[in-house]
Amino acid sequence: MMKHLGLLLPLAMALPAFAGDPAFDKAYRCMRATVPSTLRVQDIQFDSTDRAGGTRMLRGKVYATVEKGLARVSIRITAPANVAGAAYLVRERGAGQEDDMFVYLPSVGRVRHVTGAFANGSLLGTDFSYAETKLIQNAFSGADGKLEAPETLDGRALQVFSLLPKSPKTSAYSRVRVHMDDKTCVPLKADFYQGETLRKQLAAPVTALKPSGKYWFLSEIDMRDLVEGSHTTIRIGAAAEATGISKGLFDPNSFYQGN
Image (tube, rainbow, N blue to C red; front, side, top):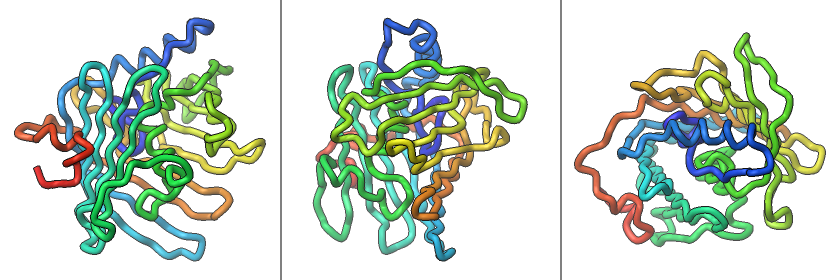
């Protein structure tokens, strides 16, 4: 993700080049260069808490790989029983093209191509929308951006990017600010704005940075909806190289089926 952010995940996946800002482009290339091309699998758990304090837990696995330079990420839910079998797939399509997103819900019994308003709906009842999950997984590719003044967090230097959507009319956010750890190139925080209102905030403590071979990942990250008063914490296990896994996990026609 892998220097991962949040859902695993490649917060360091395919990223656009910005020829007008060499410093910005260099920082993004740092993230991209950390993504392993081998197939990885990680345990993942979502713990969601609503405004009233009610909680809900989801457990599953995340599978990720890179094919011909393009990201492929699949999330498979295994518990609780009432949503076991639900699955989500993101397929990067390359520069200038919208990434493909697909979801399968056992209660519906079919694959749905995630587009339009549905993309802003909740991902399996968490504080992440389908669109936000895709943005995080692909390091906010498809956005225009610039490098801002550096900041610090718990003594660590951060590079800060201000990102603007290329299609404001269809984007849920007018601006996203990403704070990336300068040493590991892992983003530790992202602020999602609607106009001048800070609507959601994604954040992880520096202590959540964990090594996995020569890469780093975040073992825990929290998404807060500052308007609804809810939040979802994601806990992620160390990445392991997956063997014997079918490429059907990344096929829109079979990603929800057993390996």
